[in-house]
Image 1 (cartoon, rainbow, N blue to C red):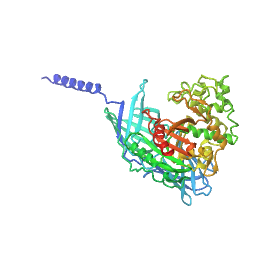
Image 2 (tube, helix red, strand yellow; image 1 turned 180 degrees about the vertical axis):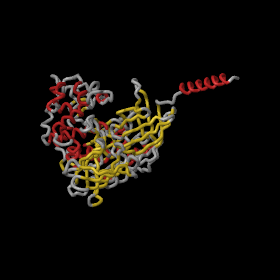
Image 3 (cartoon, one colour; image 1 turned 45 degrees about the vertical axis):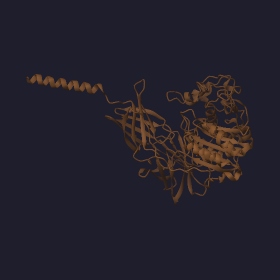
Image 4 (cartoon, rainbow, N blue to C red; image 1 turned 90 degrees about the horizontal axis):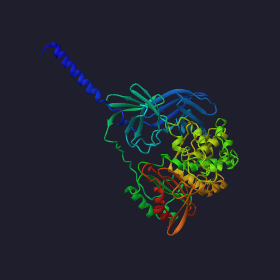
Length: 573
């Protein structure tokens, strides 16, 4: 064979091989799985050492030093500073100077933290970005990538530890082979480098690397593995802590603990799936406390819409204090000038009371629905979207459940306060209850707490809130909310027309009735998606709290079944 023939044969083979390689490109869409090298990467220790009047030395660690810098407070009376305009600190000294308390804000999450004094000028405490206090149960992580219709690449991270609320991925920006985005809840930044067959994923706090891992593509689906947590459940007397709860054995206050033993057994037998906690108070004492699936009394739980009832309480406190004149004040007396153009003859009539009772008359199931105004593709602010939605009923005449109503309550209160709303909520409600370990989620402004369902509390603290209302606004002898507001809150103002049972409804509180031993038992309830419930049972002098993880399996009402089949027989024996 001649030399030029050999040359063209080799060239042809090269071109064929090259074309074959190009015809089977590496996948860019789909599921990419990997493992985190350190399950404690998101458990931070914060240290602040006071240097002089307005300067402090900040150290942030997760077993390793992540961040160390000198910061300057913008306020001499409190400690206020930020890191790279992404991480914000707003803290103040306790009266005895023994601790710094306040908020660390990262994106939409306002983490309430407590930093005890360890040395004369040094304050050290924990900040758990993922809410869990003992490290992740699973080191598995999955990144789902896809191309939008506009051929933009987006990615959504999922963590194996299901106790974590999950990431809200947004702000996608592609720079050649690297995709940048952030979690809109925690504020963590993600950097995904697209390589041949792998994705190198880095997770950062501001611009500080927290952890990184390599991900590989899979077509077999993602099944995360989770390390079992050694937990025991029993009907023994709950642990006595310094949190304001007195504890007692259920048998001493007439509880049939055999029914509760049966409940525990059926959770373990997977008859009652994704049950995270069940707590009961009876006669002002905590008498039953159980946790499952690695949850504990130290981990704030996502309450979803159950926190609407907390929003109602804050509005009641503001009315008690005269910040809001009454429930008859109209919505548009609070709305900023730039949104007044949305007012019409019907919207002018919307009162605070109509928002509290889900009877604003706005199109809360369509153009003012949570899915619509929170949709990332919505170019307008949440407030503009809700206010521009049409009216479908006369205010105060039709009861239609929708998160836009309490969202507007938060906007109203914020317009009247001369302080950050999270500080007001803490000072007037959470601090009197001894609640310190919680998270407030903001609305799209990333400044105002979201009243439509944005609080994470521990189960013991959620039970305190229920007990507060059972006790007509008192906690351990202190009047936190007026008895008059509690009575108004528990009123029956109408029936929710878009719910299966057409429940009677109060001021962001549900009413229901259960039967046990042929007797009707009335309950006033806070309810949240996935199975987050407070049941207040005045006739039985009891409060029941349940948290769950049934977000996608249509078992969100399972706590009602648990109350009916196990707890009411235990309490009303």
